[in-house]
Image: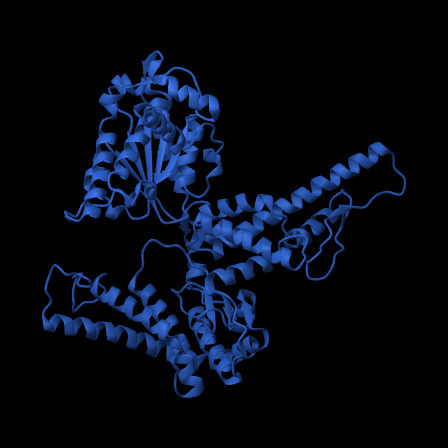
Length: 583
């Protein structure tokens, strides 16, 4: 019986945690988080060259906690670390240690690290570690006690690397996997042994605040690396990477290619194709009437080079446009958007993916599924007035992000929406907040002017406005009477009735002033609002070029003109520099 139990436990330990011996993921495959890759390169260098650090009596990190929102690439980054180091990779999740039987999680933690020590130098990645690393509550229930026992075992295993690695041993030679690997696993206790070291524990979570403090102390997880959402540079790199494998519509740059090639000595481009871009013929170089095989091969190679250049230029333009439209997207969101656009293009039989396909995929992502239910003409007209009010107020507000798309297509719970080109700034002034509130109230103001009474369609706008007003007054200190007190959401200090009344009054006053300004602006631009409403009812969707044509240029002090964003320099270009450089 003892032999049977030993054989069963050995087989379970061998087959329980799969090892990826060769990992093909590298840092070059990760886009949009350069500073995180630089941080992990330091950890990787300590693994590759331990002697360099041991000379200075420096201890390499034993554990790194990767914290970030879902889809930011925590698992991919862990694979890249193992791939760059050339080490075996063991990936588990926190739920793998959960069981209905007491003690199973503790034994699994013990077997995981025993297997890692037998491998010697390896990378262990525990995804969603908050499942087993949750802060201990002191509850006396059996479930809580078993969870705390699993956490305690994890703490012991991670804290014992330095001393245990000097004494723990592994079998020389042998590979994990296959029947030979299992036999080698059974024979390990009888083989000659040697000491090993070099286990790196990586863990991923999007709720680091739930983790026990004992797990986060130095000696266990020495570093916490926060993976943020990519900025405009990161999104541009992400879309450039994902668009590489997608045949995009060359019509984005075909006109520029034709004009440049007509003035040069190279043969002209053939730009024939079907209307609408569904089946556009690739740009080709016209063939001479008589040519040899060698000339034919050269011509084919030249055609391919021209096509590749046009496609690369189209991908670059498309990546720049998508990066501006997808503020707040993670790497997973960018990948899904490219896939959805390709699905849309394939569904109507297109030979390439166009920007219209990406717009359809983006609308689906932001607004939800398009509703097929009919809507009364009067309600559709009111929706057009509401969205036109948002667009007009935002267009003529100096500190508001410029609107780039207005739609009255019913998607999800929204009868329409206005999309803005968000300039990713790190701070806001009271003028910025005031114009944002004014723009959010522009739809209700337009209904008030056009119909004499507003509807209840502005409920989400009012919720947003209320939150922004209380944030500005009670947390950001943008009020003289209340002073520099952060009273919003502050439960440590009890507020007097007088302070609460002042808090409510000042927030209400800020919203009232913004609404009055929106009403005045709608009255001054009533003719433009009516033209915009008519075009919306005709086209359902209008874009920035239509707004420019109907409303004219934005004010000279408008945010998009005064402070044009420069992705290359990660900064805001001043107006005088913009005039000199032509940005």
